[in-house]
Image 1 (cartoon, protein in one colour):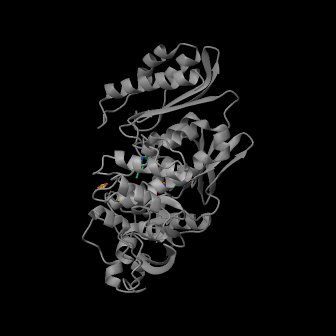
Image 2: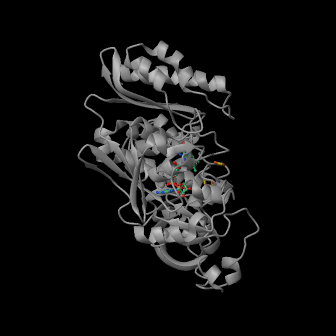
Image 3: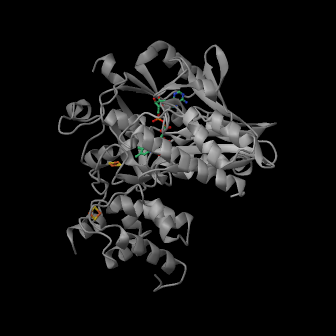
Length: 168
Length: 317
Ligand SMILES: Cc1cc2nc3c(=O)[nH]c(=O)nc-3n(C[C@H](O)[C@H](O)[C@H](O)COP(=O)(O)OP(=O)(O)OC[C@H]3O[C@@H](n4cnc5c(N)ncnc54)[C@H](O)[C@@H]3O)c2cc1C
Ligand code: FES
Ligand code: FES
């Protein structure tokens, strides 16, 4: 490898779903390509790769980010959580069950990103209004459901977590 | 279960055999021709301002600062730009955070949108910023995007440049030779153009603490929550009888840069009322047509916004 290309790859170490991972990556690789191609974690999706659709939303150091607008090298040293990890841990099992019950997913392409966004809202605001829910998921496109069922599922989950099961 | 359910609930663990460390060079470095991806570039992550200045001096126009990446990485993915080197300032100490010193609030360039709105000095003294931030993009983008990136990019439809103008902010530009300060009104030069030189970094934004009694107003018209505005207005001033003191009306999405509507503000300052100010707006704004509407539409929308925002400010909302 000549000197010119050495600065185009970089060794990174990060924690993905609690597991330590070290890899050499091309610096231009964004986080979701790294997760999908390098780690074969294909739950994070790519729709637009320009920050518009939200299908790539993952958690980095505890906050939801666009995985297509972050380079894998920028995640060096970070804790990354994907839908696979969130599912395994059971942390959002109630939200996932509500999505299922309310038919808040059809093709499922938007769902991993939608769940990461919704989980962040519920953690920050235990009693969001429907308007607040809509504003919060405004950056997550769904081409199937028409959103109504998704808002229902998030609202139901919030109510259940407050101990008001059966509301909404 | 539908296919969708499987996508969500099918748990997987990391495939440890997928790519051995230092493995298949062709695959790691190779041009991935299957999809349109960011062009190849070099990447440096300096850990001090001195290192940043070294890189900017050495690479000149070829180097591009990477802050939150929420605009830059999107344009790279679309291959609208192909810098030779990205200089990631995300880990340079001292660039993030909001602090008050006397009558000035200093906002570090790397302060992310989400932290800006929540910062105590902003909550206490700069309600204009707290109101504007929820209109910027969407939560996941606000978690990464920075005020410095937004101001340096100078998108004419962006919220924060207009807020800087309305608040009378000063941009602090740093380079090897030291710092220089440029008023917001002189900083923005046109469509995505500022006075920033290639060897300079926007280090901070200094905002004067508004005088007692100051009120802020903010609103924008967009097709969808989180979209860039068609037209927007950031305003700040102190009510004085029927008029105003120090009233600044900064429109965005109305020209190639944020614009102070000085004629309309002068009418309001003298107690001339909203209708007269709306009429005066024609002297302040000369909006180009774009995909969101022709100049006449934009002028109309600007008048509507002026009525709403100043009306709300006068009522103390
Ligand atoms: C879908 C989508 C919707 C959006 N909607 C809006 C919106 O409604 N309103 C809005 O205002 N923004 C919007 N944005 C942009 C977002 O706010 C960005 O965060 C912001 O414009 C750029 O900040 P950044 O930190 O991400 O900068 P980057 O993308 O990292 O950089 C942007 C530019 O500024 C330069 N730069 C960055 N920091 C500095 C510095 N300190 N000194 C000198 N140069 C610097 C970079 O070199 C680059 O040219 C949107 C983005 C997306 C993807
Ligand atoms: S793929 Fe990242 S926002 Fe669409
Ligand atoms: S379920 Fe198909 S895009 Fe949302």
